[in-house]
Length: 202
Image 1 (cartoon, one colour):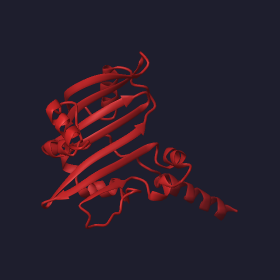
Image 2 (cartoon, rainbow, N blue to C red; image 1 turned 90 degrees about the vertical axis):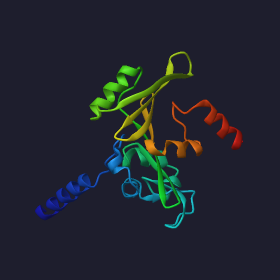
Image 3 (tube, helix red, strand yellow; image 1 turned 180 degrees about the horizontal axis):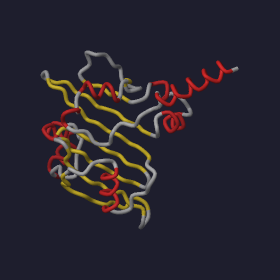
């Protein structure tokens, strides 16, 4: 009986040690690498034919089987801490381009710009530069989405707060022109670039 108790305790501890750790919201240039992307999101996108020789592919933080499961969001909530993370990866002319997106439910509702600065500081982020901010009403007169574009550690991060949900889209500052040509715009993307892309892709 004592041995069984010890075994149960060991398995419980093991389970705690292997529980999912949510990736950070913001990364710096030093760790914004393909190696880190493959560590954070080791699974091919469910709808993409993936091989190591592909020049364009997606990686997710959860396997294809989760996407195919009717209880997908329950699994993401329980097993992946309500976190959806993916990388879009392009390889061109011996260069690698990374676009990162993370979406996560949080415990508080962000209703004004002051709150999201407080939220970021609580997450350990303080040394960032705000480029632009905006608020958009998307349902009724009181329900808003707050967007903040900032630079942190050589990375452009566009953060959206909507109710108890945060979405962060990121890429290297040095790769902004490239990603804008792929339709990945940020708050400071010139209107003419957006209009040109829309015209060419519709």
